[in-house]
Image 1 (cartoon, rainbow, N blue to C red):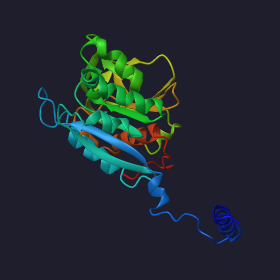
Image 2: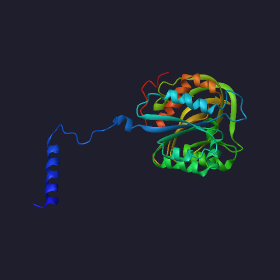
Image 3: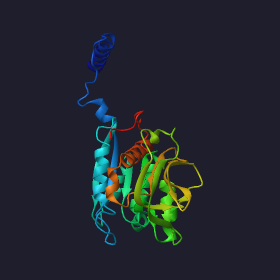
Length: 272
């Protein structure tokens, strides 16, 4: 028998012995498989914008609060990112993630300002990843950026005809049977809500929470089952950072993000 053939026979005999042995370990993992399976979620915030009083538009602080709400969620790895312009590393970080939450100033314009940011989130969406947007991150003063927000998140507070109002009202679940609504209860709040939002025409927009504004129940939180097979979530509240103290807020936002990431939400909702 020639040497190459002898080597091949030896390998085959060894392999067959392993397959015949029920307790044989072919590959020993060097890390926990549950850790490998976790989805990577980025919470992207920035410092408060200059035109608002302290305690409002607290984007970075809000992302830290959301991270605490999501602590211990099975199958999820959360990282908080603080945007400091020009944030050149941002597009690459977002493009590699399984999901991204934006809480920044005039977010639709913010994405259009650097097309690489918009393209990064587009790539996440194409992979079926989860996308979420909070308060002014869904917004744009100029109508030209409305399509960007609608295409990624399903809704936008944009253009010169956009509507918003500071008021005391009730925030309540829109569909008690939806997984995001688990553990949610109506709460009275002082808030600046964006309303009469511009929504996507394709895919399925599901109202998740409404607020009574000018004698009408307006959708202020929604879920979108995108045509690409992924999901997006949006909430137009959170002008006032203090509203994170409400269990309704913490659960609505955290569970909305979990739904967008296609993660199981506890039957009674997340812990208070």
